[in-house]
Image (tube, rainbow over all chains, first blue to last red):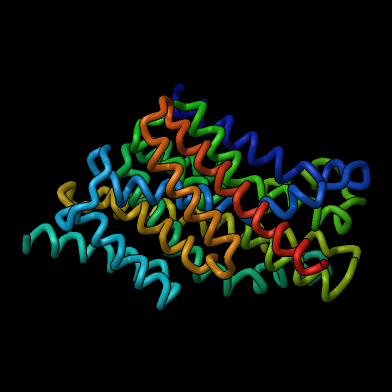
Length: 104
Length: 233
């Protein structure tokens, strides 16, 4: 699919969801289960992207010490947990990966 | 200054502390969009067509992984589903407005504009110019997002290709997920989604991602329900 089509469809769906209840006000109520489930969307989607990026850098499972992306990712997880700072987390992960690549 | 403009600028002021966090995020988006293979112009246009930070990062990652277009569209939709909650939450305050106002405010309904606006609405209640406050908060965020994306794209073009910048996307996601992992159901949602993503990685069309996300959402919801039922009994 063309990148412009992807953006237009993705944008239209996003706009539609943003407009949904503003437009439908009073005519429809969100089911409680859906409200509850939405909280789990970001951690689930993002973890589903993070896990292969760390554990499968070459498209196969790699649990060795020389999987530098896994090691650098572990550093980033620690930094994110302690600091809750996006920029620091990215810097720590990239620097850890560069060091591992240069030293080993 | 009339009341409308006063409300508008109050919205801009209420939004400004949030902009401090948004600006670096836009810079990172711009730089990473380029490194994931998007050309500068589409990368910039995504910031106004989709205009939703985390889904733009996810889209960039999937473009980098050459996922099929339909999977990218679906993933953008899943990541942005929470906006329906915001929509329901602000709806009663802008119910009286003409459709073109509703459409404009819906377009501007991001996490950060919602956060500033709903706090104001809950404190001040309904006033005849309160949609101008929403517009001010939304416009401030929109402008910041466009400018920071553009600067990021400009900077990204100057970063040497040998740097492992593609790794910055999963790192960004780590920074977004860690602060959310506050209770067992959320942790279980994240872990189960991660495991399924690894197990189902070889599924065609990146469908493993969608499957993993659904399993994670289901696991979290089921665990939370079990906990609350036990609490009641």
